[in-house]
Image (tube, rainbow, N blue to C red; front, side, top):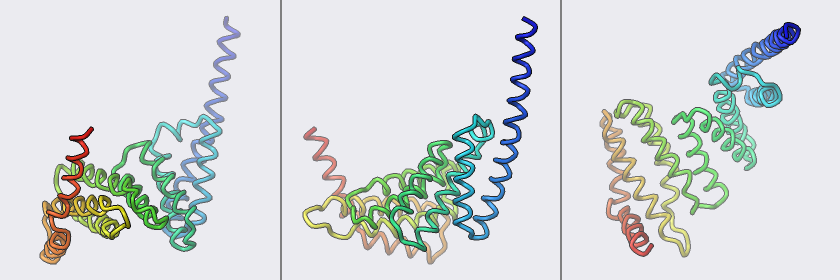
Amino acid sequence: MIRLGKTILWYLLLNFVFTSGYSQQVRDLHNKIADNFNHNSFYTTLNLCREVIHICETIPEPECWYTNIMKDIYHYKGLAEFEIYKKELKKKRLSDAIESLTLSYNLYRDPEVQFLSGYLKSLNALVTKKKTDLNGLVIGWESLLNLYANNGWKISADIVVKIKLYLGVAEKFTEPIPKEKYTGAFAKFIIVMACDLAERGNLSEPERKYFEQIRLKYHRDEGRQWQKWRSNVIQHE
């Protein structure tokens, strides 16, 4: 019994020594990833992220799964892949970026990451000419509401910036699609709601005029086409 206890103790000690070495390696790589990304070394950032993911997938490393490191790793990986996509314009890079950001969001439900994921999904729908895919717009809208809630139900300057980015993409979904009219109606409806959200903030005069122009361009009645269609669907279900 004593011998068994000693064996277990040695096993635990060796396991601690073994994994603690990898913990330090993961932390060091995490710091290198942040440094390389901040210096626009996106290919190096991507390779370092892959190295950490390989370590964490093959070794039961507590640093990987009991801290927020993996959320950061997938976040940096997605951002680096998107930056590389902007240089190469390869659709696979954009798909990889979306997958990485989705993995990051699934780990810690960070609405900042959720916004990026929704933004890139909308962009991907436009790039692949699948404008009826509204998942990105829906995810983006949910993320804006989550950011609003997390900020004590106040619209910060950062949220206003994100709403402007969101509107820039959403407007592209309002363009007519042959034999399909509800995508545009939904996009107009959600654009008006985004303007409503932005105007709850302490806006500058130019910002207020900007959102007012968007509102006039996509009149509330046009957005209500979507509400009317949804009401008809629910009634016939």
